[in-house]
Image (cartoon, rainbow, N blue to C red; front, side, top):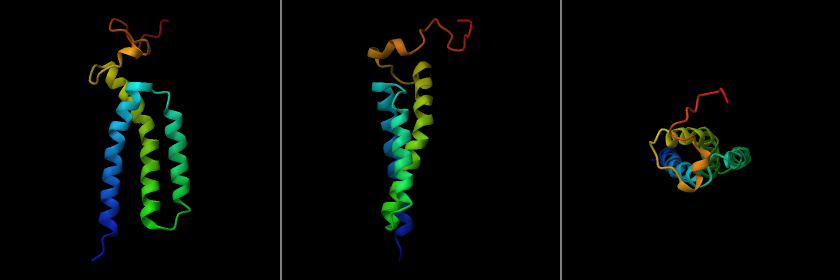
Length: 109
């Protein structure tokens, strides 16, 4: 029997599962500013995966890098979820969110 496929599938599932709380905690403590870190980590991991011969390590790097890149969009989506009240807002960063009586789509200045 060959376990390569199922091992990579399990590793992918766990990696994506780990990124979910990472994105939530990142937005809570630092907002969306770390998106550049996600970009650099994602590009570095995906590029490194191209040069690693071991299928497990290369797969992990590729999945981790792709998850970091996907996390950029999720970071901004998480901010919108917080603004809607679906997730708790960090009270130390209240100034980074629109006030309850403000319309975030209002462009009149």
